[in-house]
Image (cartoon, rainbow, N blue to C red; front, side, top):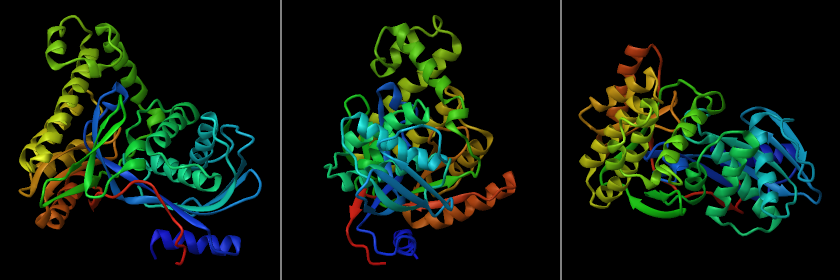
Length: 384
C-alpha cells in the first residue's frame, strides 16, 4: 500500500468517510550549495520521490484534528488559539504553519486529517519542510487560498525561525513547494528566483543515509550562522553573498581564523553552485562531480559540519568507479550524503557502498536511488 493509499484508508477508518483532498509535499536533497541559503546565496536542491501526505476534509469550526500514522498520536488545536509547546514536535510544525499564515494576514479554517511520510526524520532531507508545505497546502485548500510556492516557503521559514526556533534559511521550503520534475532548482536565496536546471543525462542521484542523526536546535547550526554574520559585518555588506573569493583571501590575516574559514566556505560554495548550474546545462557530469567533491572538502575542513560517518561514506562513494562525485548534504553533523553516479550502475554502486560502510562503521546505511519530482501538490482523487 502506498503512503497515499495509507492516509486515505486511515482517514476513512477514523472519520467514517473519505477525505475530500490529499495534500503532498516532498523532501529534498541538495546537490550543491550548503549553508549558503541563510547568507543570501545560491543553492541547487531537487525535490525527491519521498514525501509527506495528508488526507483531509474541511471542518466548519476553527479546530484542526490530525492523526499521525508514524507517531500514532492525535493532535488537536484551534487556529484561534495559537500557543507554542503543547504538542509533539510534528504537530508543532503544523500549528506553526497555521500561526505563520495568520501572521501574514490570511484567514484560516479548520480540518480533520491523517498524516504520514517516508522522508527520514533528522537525516538532512527536510522532513520538517515537507510537513510544513503539506500543511500549507492543506490550510490553503480548506481556506480558499491560492497556492503561491514562494510565499508558502516564506511562511514555512517563519515557522522554523520563530515558532520552532531554528534559525534556518529558506531553501528547504522553497524546493518542497516549487520543485520541478526531472530538474534541480537553482535558487537565488536573496531574490527567491527559481531556475530549473536539468540533471546530466544518464546519471542518477543516490542518497546515502549514514543512520547517524543530528538535531538542528541542539547543534552548532545557529553558531555557524552567527559566525557568518560576523564576517559579513567585517565586510560591511548585508550578507556573504556580496563577497567574492578574492576579497576573502585578501583579509585572511585580518579575520579570526574560525570566522575566516566559515566565510571562505560560503563564498567559494556560492561560486561552485553557479558553476554547477553551467556544467549541468552542458550535461557535464564529470565536472559536476568534481564540484561536489570540492564542496564536501570545504564543508569538512572550513565549515566543520561533517562527522566521521559522513566523511567515511563520502570517501567510500568517491572511490567507486561509477561515482562522479559525492558530498554531505543537509545541515550536517550527521544524516545524509549525496552522490552523482552513472545511471546504469546505480544499484551496483548502492550495494558496494552499503557493504564497505557496514565493514567500516558496523552500521547499515539506508541508500535511495532518487528521482527529481514536482513540488507540493493537492489531489481530489481520493480512491484508495
